[in-house]
Image (tube, rainbow, N blue to C red):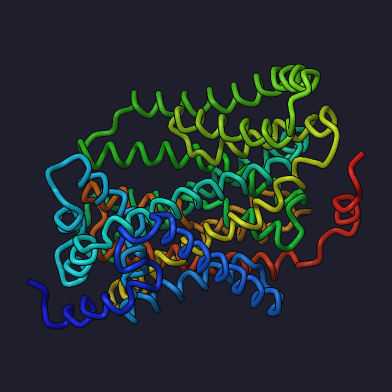
Length: 484
């Protein structure tokens, strides 16, 4: 039975359900709730971006804050759809349990979420007549946001020459290594300071979370301020790709330690080998084979070849990255770098970048609004959580900013460090895994959410200050010139 505090929210559900969804599923096309939710998120992203433009800040900051405000205000005013959507990946686990086990959505929610009034409310909403609609809306937005970040990283890759990446590869490696080691040591130190009796697995997991870098946020900010082709940007993006591989190894180590009490060096070697093989094979074979395939397709007269092949190639490499147990964004980024050197020369017409720009404008803001929606401000109510979150944020910032000193003095080291700072969805994924295997408790998870939120919000501001916001005039003129 629901507590008295929860009953008014459930009663209000009947009045607010029509905000996103119809009162009877059988009387409406099932795509309608998804359409309405998409409209609200898209308009919110546009509004947030416009406000930030007026304030001379990157649009991504406005999109994150709009999502954060919408999610938390929706929860405060008991909007059922936003209340459910804030659960994020928990909804995926709930749906999986309901599909594979002898549970309905309501019972699955009670199994997945921690006990308490909030869980009772989520179970009540998912067990109601709109439960399947909430899951449908979540699934659509989640999939679109994941595709959006692939589009963004593919476009970033299209801006980067492999020759130039090789030139900064040494410094990108230095930055990545420093950005792994320093935050790990500092994070474990904070854990020992706050929880002297904590287990080694918990200390390692928190340190591992601090090693993460959310390249999607940094990539978007660099594009917003017109600095995505600078040497600093290439070092940041190259270091972030290396970070993805190293973070995977860190995650394998700490997960193995948490699950078994021992570290399996065999599993670490296999994971590392897969990552290295994918990167070498995708770049090496891709550069050799892709031009031959494109020339054959072009001579065959395939319609819309540039858009179809470009997008398909990015998706294939993203899928192969997943097969190699790497982040899919690594594959999309590699696809962009492979096509950068020859694609627009081999296939005439409008550049692939220009063809994808409208898709980027429509899809990419959804990802950042969706990330903001999932931030739960009420989890920061505990003093211990706030102290832990702030201390972890301080060392998280120091660790990544110090990593910028892996660059030569002639470059903007602060900008490189700030570019590596946001943890974003990567940090949340780490924290979610730690929570699922019992290493990260509710308090630590809330502290990590605070860390993720602060580094995600601070990074765009810091990058704007350290790198400026006026695009390179020569690049702007070149981008606006008609294709030949």
